[in-house]
Image (spheres, rainbow, N blue to C red):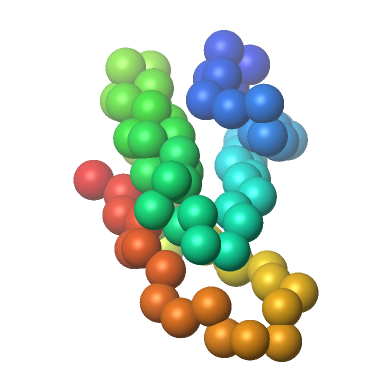
Length: 78
């Protein structure tokens, strides 16, 4: 069960879907904890004999600044 997956207070779980959210302020991109949360999720899945489906995995950036934030660090699933 995904009920014991606790990678963040900003984790939303529904049936077999999990969403991890993070607010990253401008200039703080290098302080993102999202990569470590993804690693924890991947390890949890492995320990529970599950696999993440990269084809169904999405990364969404939402910004309200009229300025282009530039490239953000990539997020990978191992």
